[in-house]
Image 1 (cartoon, helix red, strand yellow):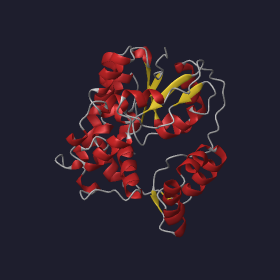
Image 2 (cartoon, rainbow, N blue to C red):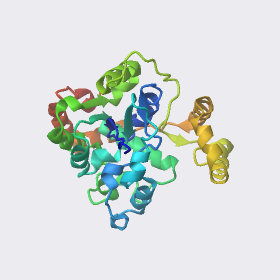
Image 3 (tube, rainbow, N blue to C red):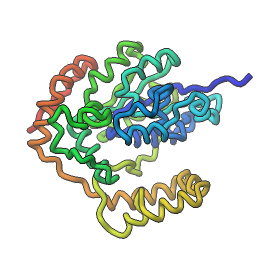
Length: 309
C-alpha cells in the first residue's frame, strides 16, 4: 500500500509580496521538495463549481489549478523520505474556507505567510496586470469605489486585509505552527529570513541559497522587439512552449539558462512611480484599521507602514 504524501508546510501568500522568490529559494535546499506546480490552490478549489465565478479570469485560473486530490498528491510523489515537502498558493490567504480545510486535512502542517505594505502590494498587482495586458475596464482610479471589481476580486484590495485574512489561520492553528514574514525584512536580509524559515520547517539553516536571480519583478514591459519575441508572453516563447512542451519544461528546469533569461527580461521592465499622495490615501482610507489589528495579531510595530514621511 502506497502512503499518501502531503505537504509538510504551506506558503499561503500574499501575492506580490515575495512568495515567488521564496518558492524559488526554498527549492534550492537539498532537504526541501517544492511542488513543481506553483499555486496549485487545491485546498481552496476542491469541490468548487467552476461556473460559480463572477469573473472569467477566476474561472480560467480554476482550470489552471489542481482541484482534485489525486493530481494534487502527484505533486509530492517524487519527494524522498528524508525531504520536507511544501507548496505555495496565494489564494489560500483570501479564500475563506481554506484555513479550515487545511486544518482538517493537515493539523500539524507549518504555515508561512509573506506580507507587504498593502498599498504597495496593490500597486504592484496593478503593474503586473498592466504587464500582462489584463488591466480591467475599471481602472486604478476606481480603487476607492467599493462597488468596483477592485473590492470584489480576491487578489486586489481584499488580499491586503492581512489581519482579517490571517486571523482564520490563527483561530485554527497553534501560533507555534505559523510564521509571518514582512517583505521589507525579506528584501533587507534575505539570508537571515531564509535561515529562520529553514529552521522553522525543520531543515538545516546553514545552507546558503543563490539569491542573485530576481524573480517575478514588478513593473511594466518596455515596448521593444525583445519583449515581443522573448518576453514571458512573447511570440517565440509561446510558439516554443506550444510546439515543444517537453523541451520547454527541460529548459525551465535548467537553472543557468533560467537565470540568464530572467535577468535579461528584468532589464526590460520599467518600474512605475507610485504617487505618494495616492499611496497615503489608500493606506489611510482603506487599510489603516486592518494594519492596527495586524499589529495586535502579530505583536509587532508596523508604524513604518502607516508613516508616510
